Amino acid sequence: MLVEQRERLQSGIFITFTGNCRAALTFYQTCFGGTLHFEMLDQAIQGYAAIPVVSASLISERIVLHGSDLVHNEGRRVGNYLAIYLPCRDSIERASFIDKLVSQKSAVKVSPDEQAKFIEVTDIFDVRWVLGI
Image 1 (cartoon, one colour):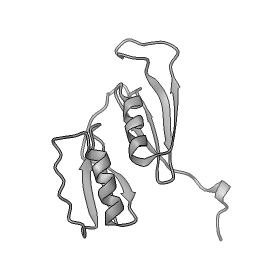
Image 2: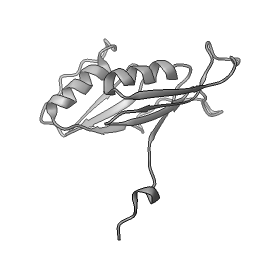
Image 3: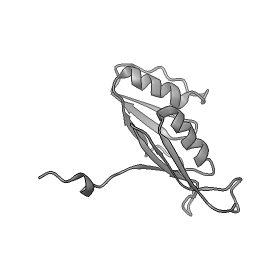
Image 4: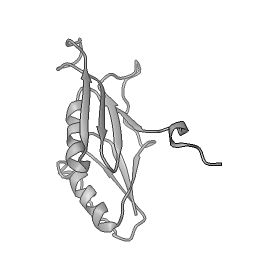
């Protein structure tokens, strides 16, 4: 039995940033296109250089990303346990995404094997991406 669209659970990617959520989602918009929406606090709070983003979303044809500057009490920890998987149509589209995601991170040198099923890159916001074909 098929579940109707309105009854399906929808998952999304939620990334916690530490004060650079606006910059990160704006960067991802240059990579994937789409529409941005930001909900901000009404005033600055201690520990943040600018008014923090409470909730943000980027909605494009290929991906939906959500984020916030507000971190859990234990803080944000960068680790290798999580990556965003993005299925690509072909190796040309994947190469284009790689160029966009690492274009501003000069330390990253990617010489992808065009036939590899998965290629992992890390962007300037320390977010890991697995690009598959």
